[in-house]
Image (cartoon, rainbow, N blue to C red; front, side, top):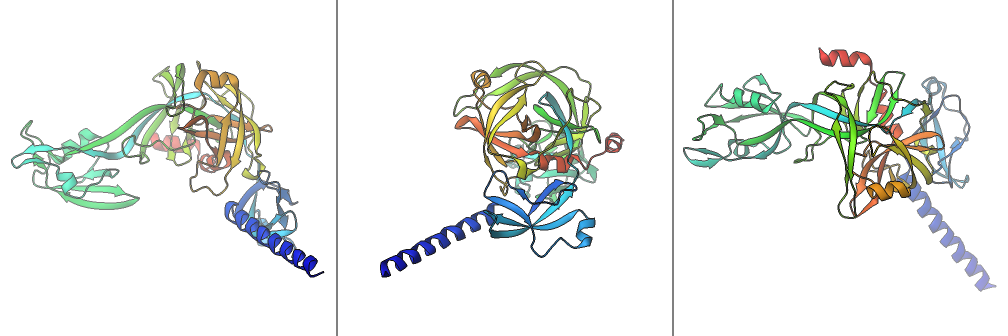
Length: 411
């Protein structure tokens, strides 16, 4: 009898430990906020974790003030029995977006100039870099010099010549504005006063358009920020535009060496503005509505582990659908753009590209008739797999835009 009781005791303790670890796991990996469609108040499931449901709190509905703001408090439940934690559920209209997959070109001018590296100036005392010695760091964005607004490397050089004894810089570092005073060095080579830095003031590239929102004529693309190739920092945007692109060829990727889409700009005429360069992608306004019909956007809890389709372009200008598997959904990733792990399974795409290649970033992902996200990164050591971002994260950015912002930016 004692053995039976002891066995039951051990089983209960083991069950309690496993249950506690499960609850702790879900409490950590699941978010504190969800969105869902208006007028739906019933319980719902987190489809990537079938054992987790979201349930109306037992003490009744949320306060009337919350309901007016379309917010309510609900509880995450494990197996419908064990509470995990309370969450906020935001009621909203389900966005209708036109998935694209078309390639597009990006032309961007930076706000200020970004310091990418240091060089040496040959002066009276030999080789020196006044900028490095004066406290400038790579990744700094110089926005003015000697009181002159800076938007190009040439503009910075001209401003330095205004005062041969001192150069007063205003720069942005990690979001903070700093003031530095440097002593430029007169170059023996050309007689100009120099700071000994390399800067970047523009960039161009190819990406993929994720979706178009007819409600405010906005678009979202790329799924991640445009960064400086040398520093890895997000390029501060002053002005940008999109242009049509045609894909001419593909460099096939192999494990260890991701491939890329090779294309050419079809026109110098702008097809849209770029208003934002953010962690979640590039966003702007465009009058060029892509072909196709609008589909609902999936909220993150609606995304399932399993089959899906990406739309991307590997030849010409017309996107095509290819089969993939969503292998993992990560709600609380440290990265805003690494919300899902996907794997290419389509034999045609694998044979032509090897998997995910550069330029494919932004390719929309469709599951159960809804747009769930976009491709963002390739795994270098397994080019058939990569990361994807939630469409919900991208839409939160593009929904704030309006056509008037394009006119203001142009002015």
